[in-house]
Image (cartoon, rainbow, N blue to C red; front, top):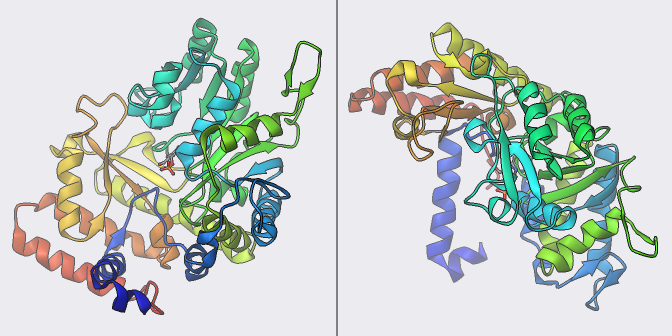
Amino acid sequence: MILKKSDADVFNLVQLELKRQQNGVELIASENFTSIAVMEAVGSVLTNKYAEGYPNRRYYGGCEVVDQVEQLAIDRLKKIFPIAYANVQPHSGSQANAALLFAILKPGDAILGMDLSMGGHLTHGSPVNFSGNTYRSHFYRVDSETGLIDYNYVAEQAKKIKPQVIVCGASAYSRDIDYIAFRNIADSVGAFLWADIAHPAGLIAKKLLNDPFAHCHFVTSTTHKTLRGPRGGIIMMGKDFENPWGRKDTKGKVTMMSYILDMAIFPGTQGGPLEHVIAGKAVAFGEILTPAFEIYAKQIIKNAQAMAQSFINMGYKVVSNGTDNHLLLLDLRSKQLTGKEAEAILQKIDITTNKNMVPYDTQSPFITSGIRIGTPAITTRGLQEKDMPFITEKIDQALSHHSDDKRLEDIKKSIHDFMRQFPLYPEL
Ligand code: PLP
């Protein structure tokens, strides 16, 4: 408790955040509660070390220990996924994506990604992001009836645009992805195929969803969502993609793609790696390799499906009518509520969600017509399918009686009582 003595202001804020996390129901699909072991590694002396470069090829002395830390993270990641190449240095998912595009595209090249309003991510070509500024971005969509990716439209767009890269993967898509269909489309126009598995990576790790590694040239992810590690990113390549994808110079010399990717992270887009975070990634990867994580990953999906069904039973519209993964999207248009309003109402009862556009939304991204709900964090706390109706009913009660402050206060109290059964960080 040195922080308490040295900086009471920051200490108190950390305590307040701990209480917030302990009392409430965390339903943000991109969040999770990492282990205390991961947090210890991230809070360790490794934060003091500069280590520009890669294990055994650094630009600083004194890297003999951090070399082992980083190599351990890489080796463990290679046991989790069927990959030949891994870079564990990206500071975040966005950094991983920026480096990948920097490695494989030239400014002005074309990228085809999922529209942000249909569930895609900013780094997949949004005009407000580097990806939409540096490259010519084009988008595909989901079917307005089914909520599923419209693969025919992807193929049409690909033929028209002839992109250098097609990205599959999303921030708010509740169904599995057909990587073979995407690969066929990519091959038909000579494009690279990139999967951004930031959201479902932990489920893919346990083979609960389709395997992107056999079909995609590049795979990026965050480490803090379903992988339950510290905040960060990773870049990977499956076993078949090292070459011939390397770049040939005029004399026919091939530069390995792994080298091009490494160079795109450092010195291309980042400086010194965060070795303390990389240590946290190594700890999380070790946890993912245990049988307990498989039980956890399966439970995430069971919980999401139970929640989706419960909402459907109560008359809510769930985009795509259910979920294959860890998240669901509630379309609130029939409830005469915007996503922004729903998020604020649920905040009053200490249920944290985020407003989210639904496919073909007519509201702006700041207002939206839906909320995104995910189960990775509550599953870490130990909630199971049988606990989902309690949560969904509280959500329904709050949304239906949102002007009744007394009622909202009572609901909040019942939620705090309920969540006490699932202690979070009792050691802290
Ligand atoms: N890619 C996808 C699909 C995401 O959903 C996210 C974050 O939500 C990212 C990339 C970016 O990750 P970060 O917030 O670590 O930059």
